[in-house]
Image 1: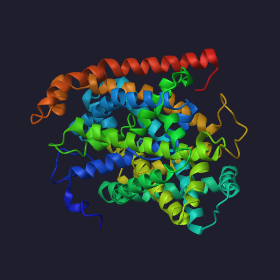
Image 2 (image 1 turned 90 degrees about the vertical axis):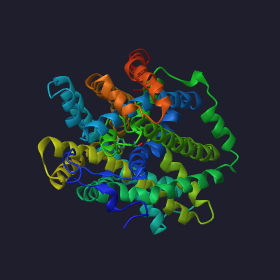
Image 3 (image 1 turned 135 degrees about the vertical axis):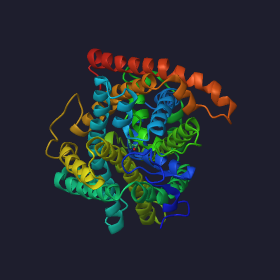
Image 4 (image 1 turned 180 degrees about the horizontal axis):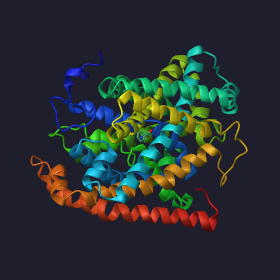
Length: 475
Ligand code: PHE
């Protein structure tokens, strides 16, 4: 049994819906789609990745660019992916190949790369999810105390112990495998739908508490006062990469979710709501984390930012133990929701392409992901001396995938959708006859996806390249 809005009777199965391929089902309540799409979008990207990328890029000016990029590039492309999914009711590769009648080599390469990218992202995401499991376990066992050194020691113990990290990754992968092999309706949405609303309330509560810290004002200023001198040439690329990552664009994930939308659902509205919810979550978590960081005046940064700062803040609250457990439980639910979104993409593509059963495809993907996760999981122990362009292995994998490969793949997938679908069918999917404004918005949307988005992505990649070549800067 799930919450009131969740019930198996809300799903249409294959017998009732012959157009669907594989084991595809979709929700008859609109709420169900939002829970799933927001569950996939909101995750470690918002709480773990956004704050350290903002820190790396100097604060307010970057946040502004990020928000503009989300609305002008992210949202239009998110809408395209939802359109493709709703039309084809298939996973990314099958849907894209159908668009080009299976003829284009280019489409096959792009979509296969998207699935490969998703597999690698899923694997390193599992490493960070493992860190969350570790903190959850420490809080639950009560083995973390209210001193800076306790939290720091805990985190460095984790970083130095590669075997422990691999065990945590395995635990997370096993949970994902069980959920996904049980199929969409029982797995994907139920878990996240229980916890995400609670997480939103908890974060707002924590933010209200953080507002009483002396550092709250400086954190707000750091995040919202744009100082453009802090930007580097790579900042636009970092902003775009993060927009795609956090909105789950370019992975085929939103194509899969689009296939669960009902006929009457208005795609642009759905895309807009997902973008706003995701953006708000990122801003709230960044404000919370920077208030805490600036309070302690110590210099935390990089991928450990969230884990090195928030536990102390939670512990210092009355009932700190309870809040610690609640926070990491919710964070794990968010990580799991996103992980399942990632895994679902890979699995449903294998099901569509190779006609494998759901459980065979799931276990196959999980085994590969486990092997791939070795590099990031051991990056701070066995491979701790490996530094590439100033990055450790985990940060390097993150930067290469998100700042470089993802924008290229997004550009490719976007082109396939916009070129492959006739303007008539795009219009049919975009425009809602009951909303007069949607007809005029269609022209704007086309302009954004055909001209503005490709130009901005190309510019961002070019600037990153300059940064790399001339300043020997970060990736
Ligand atoms: N958007 C998720 C996050 O921000 C990551 C993700 C990407 C999930 C792609 C699913 C698909 O954490």
